Length: 144
Image 1 (cartoon, helix red, strand yellow):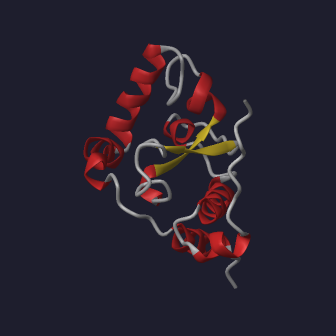
Image 2: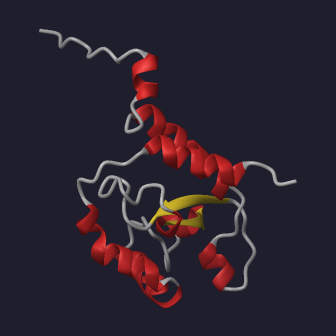
């Protein structure tokens, strides 16, 4: 027996709810746009310039909606330091690379370690994704 697809609420209803995935996705896109082409913080600490970057959530976005769009929880990383490097990789499959990431974070960004240790205190809080979107959009606006 086929399952019925759950119908999305009308767009005007999704826009009216500041906690909806509509606003969450818009905020994600603006934050991503902000971090695109910023230098990888790991490469930078090693004296290498690399601006082919994406954003990494220190506290996983699935674990804490509160920190999903907080600038203190986001860090630009190149693909290697995000996923594939053998020495330092935030999401690497090599346990030594993940340990290298944690050590790098501890030495270079202690606030990140603090976030990881305390994020559970913010679990379950409602997040105004519309406000997050507007804040990131403001950061992306060209300055005169």
